[in-house]
Length: 94
Image 1 (cartoon, rainbow, N blue to C red):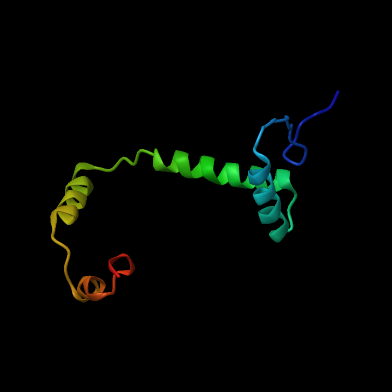
Image 2: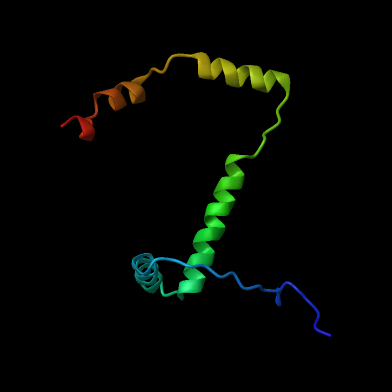
């Protein structure tokens, strides 16, 4: 019988059908990172899954912290950094 450890994880196949042009794009990107197509796709899918789940994470804080957070959000932006940002050129307005 084969035991499973951290160094020996169980893997399962995932089969995908993808247009040839997308597969070629993935292959080129994988090659630039020195990865196989499978390695590249697994890394990309894992990152996307983590980001999706992190976006759904519930953060619990006490009432005082929450009230402070709301107060900060309710304050109008200002200060030198904000003023500089507002003076910056807008590439979409050209």
